[in-house]
Image 1 (cartoon, rainbow, N blue to C red):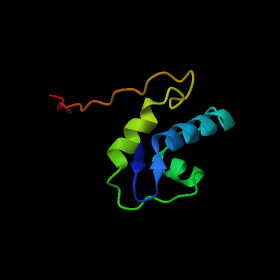
Image 2: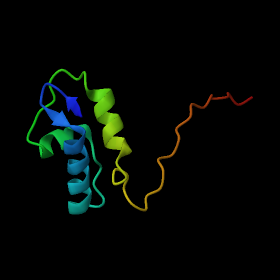
Image 3: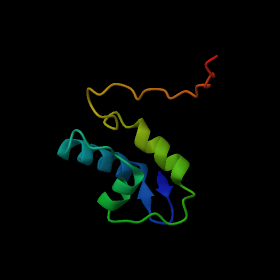
Length: 82
């Protein structure tokens, strides 16, 4: 399935790029920009980004191995000391 029509990037291309990046550097942080660069392409209109991100994140090799889940950041109220 074509994910990015502007650059003709398919879901297979994205999954392959994630697999290749993870194999070449297990600790790398994979971003859309790095995927575009690995494919020799550049982002254009950005309309594909939601589907691009979903495709990228659904790859089992996306997460850095052994690092666990990202912590959930929560807003905290500052309470003035009395």
